Picture (cartoon, rainbow, N blue to C red):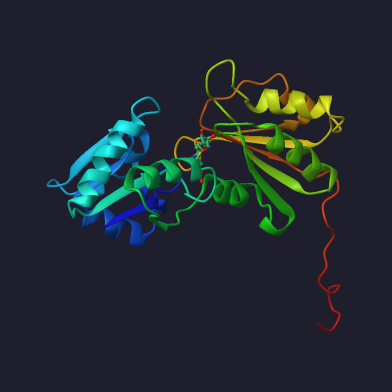
Length: 235
Ligand SMILES: C[S@@+](CC[C@H](N)C(=O)[O-])C[C@H]1O[C@@H](n2cnc3c(N)ncnc32)[C@H](O)[C@@H]1O
């Protein structure tokens, strides 16, 4: 058996009970170092731990796939929720195994941000720029989201200088595209651990530096008004 599970946003208290149960019963627990660290306290002493990084992930996942094909119970842990900014890693797991793999959702950093900043999913679009390949369609979509009066929750890209697209780059790009500079903007770092929050405008954000572990909220300039009945009216 092999299953990919969302480990939550960083504090193990946000791991689902089902996720914890799967880890406690695993023969092999695999994932990026920082994510394995999140669930370390739950990994049985008898389990094999396979940690990896961007450079050696293909070789390490081949080891995990071999253990899975040898009938070991394997769990691959993902940061936050697999289904937001996790599908390229999932594709790598499935490529190593040679077949589709089951997933268990986790709590995403986007959900924690939505809760801290009190934004409603219905009126918000989630975009990640933390991915390989062509970012242009995602950047364009972000422009359309804001033009459509929706909030945007954005995961920036913290990689090397050539590819890095952090909050200041995102803000500068949006301003170049004609998005108004006064959009209220927030950047939250290390959610559920040593949290830090920054509030300003899109224009202010263009000169701010943030750590890799950050997530951005760009609020619409025109929040939806209430669509429930006025107070005191019959429902
Ligand atoms: C590859 S993405 C994975 C996101 C993850 N699947 C999720 O649902 O949160 C990794 C990026 O998510 C953001 N992130 C993840 N956890 C975070 C946290 N606790 N606080 C702030 N940002 C976080 C950071 O930008 C980080 O570089």
